[in-house]
Amino acid sequence: MNRFFSIKNFWLLLMVCSAFTLQAQQVQITLGPDEIGENQAWTITITVQNDRLKSYDNFPEIPGLRKRGTSSQSSTNIVNGQVSSSQSIIMTYLPEKQGVITIPAFSMTINGTKYSVASKKLKIGAPVQRQQSADPFSKFFNRDGRDDFFGRGETEFVDVKDEAFFALTTNKDNVYVGEGFTATLAFYVSDDNRAPLQFYELGKQLSDILKKIKPATCWEENFNIENIEGEGIEIGGKNYTQYKVYQGVFYPLNTEPIVFPSVGLKMIKYKVAKNPSFFGQNRQEDFKTFYSKAKTVKVKELPPHPLRDGVAVGDYRLDERAAAFTVETGQSFSYQFNVYGEGNISSIEKPVLGKSAAFEFYEPNVRQDINRENGRVTGTKSFNYFMIPKEPGEYRLSDFFQWVYFNPTTARYDTLKSTSFLTVTGESLKDEAISSNDLGSFYDKISSVDNTLQKRGGSDWLSVFVFAFTGLALALSTYLFFKKS
View 1 (spheres, helix red, strand yellow):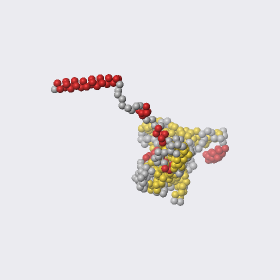
View 2 (tube, rainbow, N blue to C red):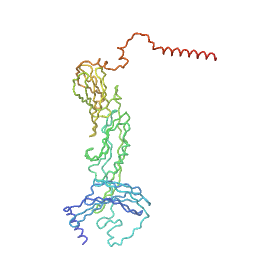
View 3 (tube, rainbow, N blue to C red):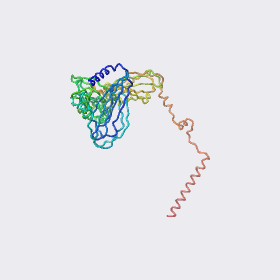
View 4 (cartoon, one colour):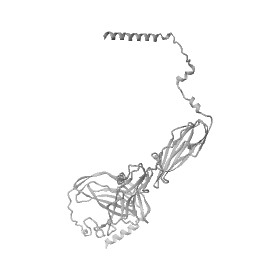
């Protein structure tokens, strides 16, 4: 009777605990003992004082130990009107064999804060013989220390059928060379699903998965998903929550088909207690791998065109800008040729310039801005030209600036041309350009030097002497050669 009275008081105190001030939150990660028997369990315990355990990372994988499952504990104490509470999650490990193993250092994020644990040695000895308890209340407890009196006997766990799948989808099944298509890798959970599921070491798995699915014959624009958030969608008239783990736009570089193989995603799938109790463990950690279906995207060659191998593919527009459209000869003129739209912005090349002696063109300054959102890649590539007009007159800038591309929506080639006119005033600078060139010191003396033949002066006696001496030496050498012969 007293026992039931104490339980009643406990529940009354628990119901009114919200009226008291809780102490500051404390988080602790506790490792098991340094030595256990081969038939004993080893544990890692997360304990949160004075707060709920709202979130925590996966417990580490430890070589030499295998995970058995998690259990939870909670308690509330009221002393002098002050309420303190604790909640714990316990991961149980079982040894694989006897010996000494190293528990590696690890980190866990608990309630949004990262905590680190140093490594330690664990000795696993011979099996330990368990002694019978002399406790007079032992009939209320089983060998695992769970309370049968409160419905905490041996718990049977059952596998609940899940309504979820893993899939790689694309927004197009057929594309041209250079045409972008969006690939999305996501996990889908039906709103009717009742099986508890949780991601498992997603970063490590995703790194291996992307190595398999990223095609080598494509340019990639990665959306770099950092936070996985569920998004409600409808598939076949049924509501699902979509968790995108990867999304990117691919641009084929040749006509080779793009093949995405089947890949697997390992998930934590909990088994649930067949007869759940308030104090007992009501779910058990287990694993299931979900596999995506293979997917192929066919690639078509672009239609015949002289520039087929070098044109950009996409849906583009032209935005042109200039400081002024009236300029004097010899005056620098700035003109921007901006290509914007949807496509592989990085692959856009500068416009083909028409040749003209009336202008002096300089290489453009190039800038690009790329936006990746809502499954699309859009942006702008700007070419800022500087040129100097040399001849007055009226000029159509379309005669100088043209940019050819292929539009996959219309399946046609198109050309972006300037619609602007440039008025050049002033005097012609063609002749001035020629006279301004430096022809060198030789040409500078032409006008001041007499071009009539003249006899050299007496100062040339040295040249005559050298010539005579050379002839004499040559004759002597010839004479000695024939005499010796």
